[in-house]
Amino acid sequence: DTGVSQDPRHKITKRGQNVTFRCDPISEHNRLYWYRQTLGQGPEFLTYFQNEAQLEKSRLLSDRFSAERPKGSFSTLEIQRTEQGDSAMYLCASSLASSEAFFGQGTRLTVV
Amino acid sequence: RKEVEQDPGPFNVPEGATVAFNCTYSNSASQSFFWYRQDCRKEPKLLMSVYSSGNEDGRFTAQLNRASQYISLLIRDSKLSDSATYLCVVIPTGTYKYIFGTGTRLKVLA
Image (cartoon, rainbow over all chains, first blue to last red; front, top):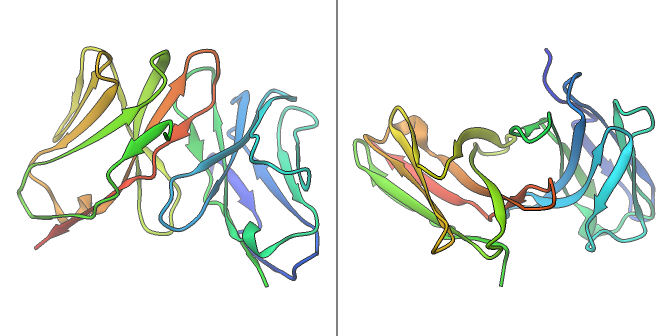
């Protein structure tokens, strides 16, 4: 399978714990995106990378959220001190230049 | 005002019907436009890009109206398998950020 891969697919965590998600993009894609989606809403932009550089970060993203793409390949999204409001589907996507973005199957986070 | 707005629906239509969705965007300098399809509890998948001259792919036609800042999607001869949420996506000029609308739910009824 050469699509975008996300791990884990599901995560249940207690409030206050830290969680980390991983995304492996399509291999030749230089752009990588993180989105968050809640029920009944479209995906909400969090951040994106071009190669290893983080070019834009949403103002909605609090300091508890951090993303990295250390070698311009896979990326991680960490949420510190999780809150119930962080419960959502976290989607990763990748693209090549200005072509369409391909999404992974997402990581569903539940904070209890 | 949201950057990209869509009627959330649902649109309930019988099989074989023609249905159209509109999406408006606020940034007049937007450069690229797409329609994505999302099935329940699945990831969004590209349905089609939207070009200035309009484009067609089988039963699906997409159009862009830059003057009025909206894009449209027309589905002819609806199939049960067309039931999904259709997401409008806009990329503003000067960024590579994909801005999604809330999506329009379509239910095609037998």
